[in-house]
Length: 109
Image (cartoon, rainbow, N blue to C red; front, side):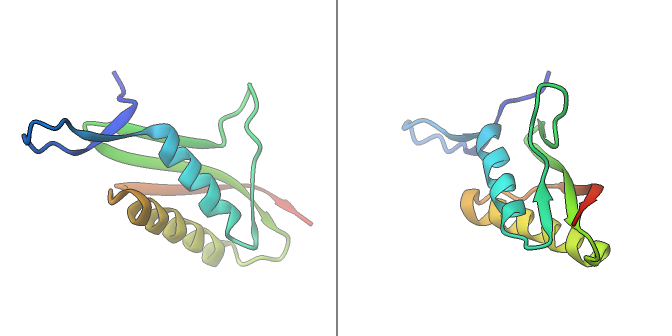
């Protein structure tokens, strides 16, 4: 069974624990893609999931489907997207993603 959250702090201080829901990671990844000039997010519908966040055994995997601007350098832009998602998730949550995959599914003019 997949988890819906990541436990960040499990100290036995008696004050509880700190955990983050995967919808927070999802929102951070969406914002990260929007920051890249040559990349476009695919809108989520009932039939497609362009962004997938998986949490299993406190390991985080993120997979994003994007469209790129026509004539953009695919390798460079995908690497930029991966780095931006990884850095933003780490900076905002303090948790390191184990894998960030970017799939190019089309191009925009």
